[in-house]
Amino acid sequence: MPLIKEKTKMKEQDPKKRIKNFHEVALGYSLEDALKEASRCLQCKDSPCVRGCPVNIEIPAFIKLIKEGKFDDAIKKIKEKNNLPAICGRVCPQENQCEKFCVMGKKFEPVGIGRLERFAADWEIKKGIKNPKKTKSTGKKVAVVGSGPAGLTCAGDLVKLGHEVTIFESLHKPGGVLVYGIPEYRLPKKIVEIEIDYIKKLGAEIKTDFVIGKILSVEELLEEYDAVFIGTGAGLPRFLGIPGENLNGVYSANEFLTRVNLMKAYLFPEYDTPVKKGKRVAVIGAGNVAMDSARTALRLGAEKVYIVYRRSEKEMPARNEEIEHAKEEGIEFMLLTTPTEIIGDENNWVKQMKCIKMKLGEPDESGRRRPIPIEGSEFPVDVDIVVIAIGQSPNPLVPEATKGLKIAKHGNIITDENGRTSLERVWAGGDIATGAATVIAAMGAGKKAAADIHKFLSE
Image (cartoon, rainbow, N blue to C red; front, side, top):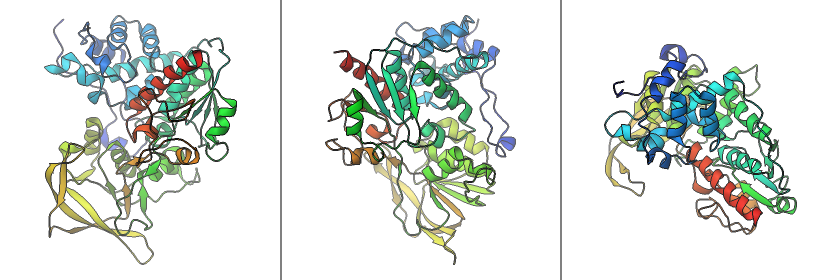
């Protein structure tokens, strides 16, 4: 069979149709697509792709099983290392992780590892996920604070090892950023529910509407549990610090996406959480969260949506796929541009945004070229909604409410390479320790911490 140089395309909703609904954009591989893509894997002996996976999935092994038509075995192989494959197959930035190291990618397009992971996970979901066998209890109890990707991964691994795990979630639904931050059209809530149900069937208990730092402290958890893992994420939005950010119609991306995703504001008044549906929307930033916000605003009925970014397209941190989807859907990119002021009307609602053009200078500490304002290049943009998506800081509630927990200047919990904190029997991982990062990076941190917690509890 001749070498297939290009990645097998995945079917997608037509852009003209999908901007009017919240249904999933990427439709997944058919059986034929999956077999074709799996045949592209070179089955490298040293498996460089595995080094790029934060949870160390045995990638060539599961792809070989797909190629052989052994789909049940393929998903079993994935789940040896990853409890959330249907989620990872949809939202992981594979181009910067496993696929970045794919040998095929040196000359041609890399193997579609994430797409094949999604295929195997979706195959199992369609067939019906069998209830996993519960491991005999060790009698040790672990509290996991936060039910995002770090917490779910840590909990899943610990219950597999026989420990009794209780997950404490402050919101009314578990999932963390998976349910409040990522839109339905990119990660359906039903998929998240199925993956979380699997964690529960493994043996983890989940308590929702339970705010650690308010209802109970970490110190009080340690009285009942043998270990505590903190995975509360990066839920504190950052702002620009310009005039007008307190006007009506200015949202942090966190609030905007939470209202729409978790609280279903797009179905108002059927669901009682409203959100203003702007006609002209500006989203500040160019990461995945900014793309999610812009594409969500479009689906809410905006006539014009701008991505306003102070650098060029080359420096955009968003996934290539998200940028391409945004372009296909008609999002307008205002590059080398930054806002200087948001102006309101007589009722304090946003009516305009003042901007200035930028040029790129020498690289800054991030390695990207520093944006410099061009004097005299100011111009106005008429908008009625502004969404600020320039990053988030670690959620401060648990760190600030926990005595003796060492915190870095940006608010993240200081840990060692295994997630151990300055407090005995307390671990942390994910965005609360690193600052805002990817879902799979948080999962990797949860996995490392689980292994170290198990080692500690077994001593």
